[in-house]
Image (tube, rainbow, N blue to C red; front, side, top):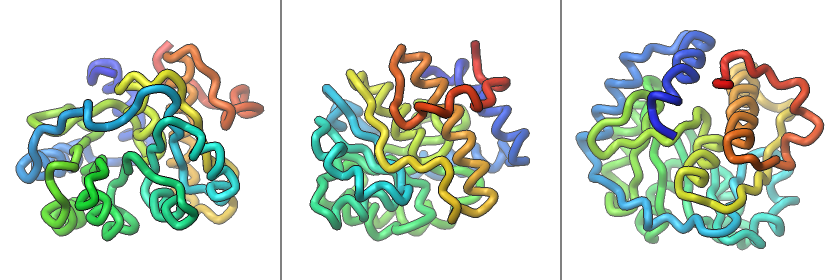
Length: 227
């Protein structure tokens, strides 16, 4: 995924949520100033990569994740998998929950994909310096700069899937994705709708079908996705 391809989708997201692009860019620049370039080859992505959302079904799908060659966890999915004995090979997070886990993972030598956007600059300032910088991959949803990358994706979960694609995963297996979770706030549901759309775009780009989208594709709004 290059930024020129991602940018029109990013602009649609900004318009939908009323986000400030300048805020994203300021957060990106701040993250760039406290991180170094990350060697992507340090993230295992050969074979099948399980991308774990943090939905209610996560623990029930732990075995499907454990059978994969690598596990990328979105935010608190990392805590929940570790609690049931599933190793996590990478965590994607914007630090909105469980920052202590992000710090711990980095210090254990597990890559953490730390995302900066306009609303999380205080968390970036407080958490990133506590991490082992050798294991921090900085990301943005704006244009990449310096060590900060943009491989596509909006929420922690779909960004982890786009990262797996960027790294050349043979297959992506979605686990713990509950698109109709009734406990989500209205804003979280809107974000999950976007995650669903982006995952649909990703599977089309890959020529793959994600089981988590079965029975849902006909209802996905594709109006802001590239043809």
